[in-house]
Image 1 (cartoon, rainbow, N blue to C red):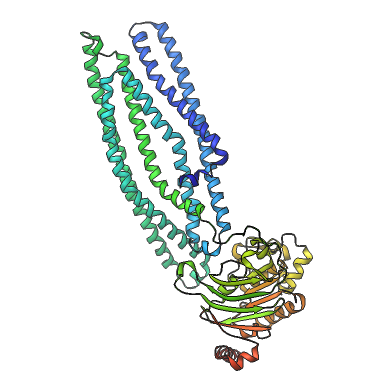
Image 2: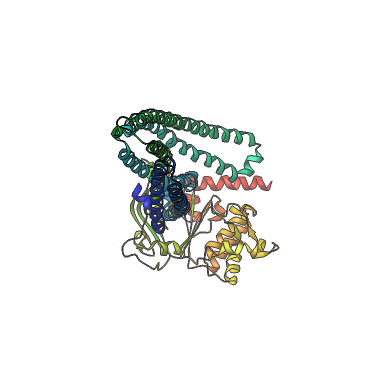
Length: 584
């Protein structure tokens, strides 16, 4: 996990090392100051030597200034390193998500990915900044202060050795109990983000059904769970401070008591005693040692919180796409012919049930193929195998006479244009959205594609025409307009295979018929696969495939299926009745 995260450090390795070195330098100056103060007291103040007081006083000012500079630069460079590291992590996560196949995306919810890119990254950023500052200052200060303290007086310094294990025990217990709490709380964050995402995305439905109160209650319940979990974790961490303070002040009392006795004893036996300056230095080092222990406890607490986030981030970074390029990929799709031979398909999460079972289907280049079937008959799953959005489980699938697994992914997906059931438009102008299909498309090509998709008629009605701004998700256009824009976008790819996955469901039958006619006239060499609920959308296809429960039960033309396929005939009769009732 750590190796995975450190890879994202990259250009910030140097600044991180500089931060560590500056932090060590800051500690060195801080350690020298009490020793200098001790000499100022013993040889200056107590001796009444003002020249010595000025000498050590100016040296103290210099040390304080150098410590301040080292601290300021360490903090500044450390903050830059932490922010840069988190930025790299976020970018690496996002880049890796873009490589995921649909099967990989299925493992993580959208809300979970958003939480990992935001909350978890922030936790890592804070933890890393503490690691290269406090996690360095703490141990270095502890080590140096202990060495100097033992050099001043071994007997008194033994107090520190006795206190450290006593401090470690409650700290370990706190961390042991806090870690599971924060591990669970970030999963609850995923739920919270999911609720927010669903609510915002479906806000029109929420309002039309007057479900605002229900959605508020749902949010409050999950928010309350997060509050309680965080409160419980923070309460446990809060025990750290009073425990530390108890030992700090206990040490101070012991050092003061033993030190005072040692100073008094120095009159009879100087070898056993202390000077006033030594006692002052020891008290300062006691504070430094115990502060360093407090810093370490804070670091451990932060690491405890961040450990869960680090694990969740590394899950995304370590996830390898289930679909990748072969070693020597085919770089050209010759035509739009498609052939399924004994193809089976199962989703990894539901490996016990076949989604597609023994699919055999031969589609010639340029053919128009309709696919009909009930809900859950796996129509969408079938066509998503063609551009390798998912990989088949068994059998062979070829496009242009070549196994799809032998193609360069970019080449294959450029040759196959899909208009999915839930195609999205993105914030930007109509032109910008359409150029997703071809970023170099000319204005004339854009207008031609829109004409084929029957989108030009409503675009010309907009004040800004093709420069009309589309809101996020296409919320400012109707469902039918959105579908036609998505079809135009797919056509701009000039694909060998065009797949329409129920993508004319929101347009009227007349417009649907015009779109189908345009396809026949203007893109005759493109293979067209049309998934539809309405038989009228596919009845003029070269062949119609009837799917039921992941199996092909019939293939034929409209008239043949009416005579020979019960399921097809039932769908047709029910739609004819529905159409007649609507007309009445």
